[in-house]
Image 1 (cartoon, rainbow, N blue to C red):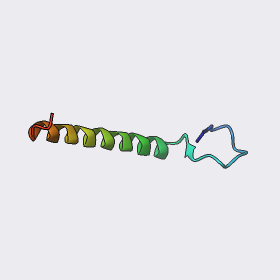
Image 2: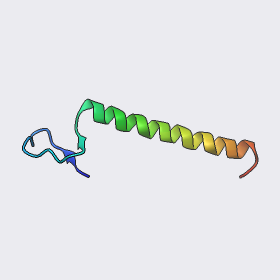
Image 3: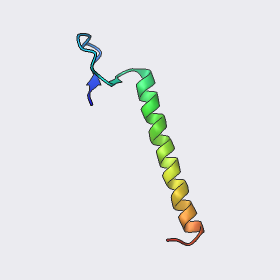
Image 4: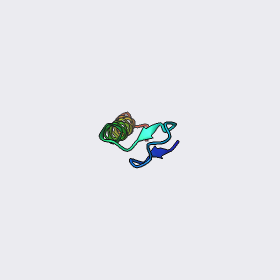
Length: 50
């Protein structure tokens, strides 16, 4: 998987593009995954699994 350069308009086989939507989407997904990981860890602590 490659990230498309803004200057490279010749090829269209890129999945990720360097624009605001892609950056926002990737940041949003990372934040959600971190929150879910924290919730699972806190649940484990609460129920004395760890």
